[in-house]
Image (tube, rainbow, N blue to C red; front, side, top):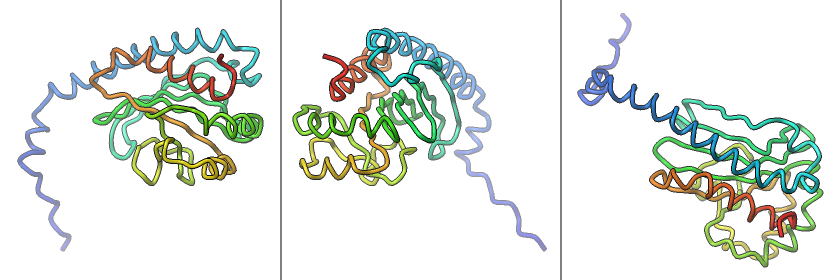
Length: 204
């Protein structure tokens, strides 16, 4: 005899009756996609200014906004621009929305781009003053949460630790924005992108 299905809790039953939540969620996701489109325009202005200094193929592909329902169980939206994502070369600036958590902006370098900018970063990172930024310490570049097993504050690294960090297969630096400040997202992402380009000595 097969076991009975699990009972649905009273809280879950309330959610089953709540049509307004799902309708509001759909509307909110559409609104956030519009904010990400505004963000892409802000990033495009900066990228076009430096199109000759950025990796040759970083701006060849148009911006992409994608969505999903299950980053650690929760919905998310992603804007990739610039987006050079190949097996041999990654130069990506990712703006990420994670339901119930925050927005974040991340510069991801790997392969050819990391080898190109590693000497510059070894010089610029120890001298940088970025108290709100985090660097990835994970073995995978595809995590975007800010738990200690994934990110450490950039200010907590000593110079020799930064060099060890840059000897990994990839380098990621990230900053987050509270959900309540969603209207600041375009300027937040633009400023973040500009500061990271300064680390690469692309932005003056």
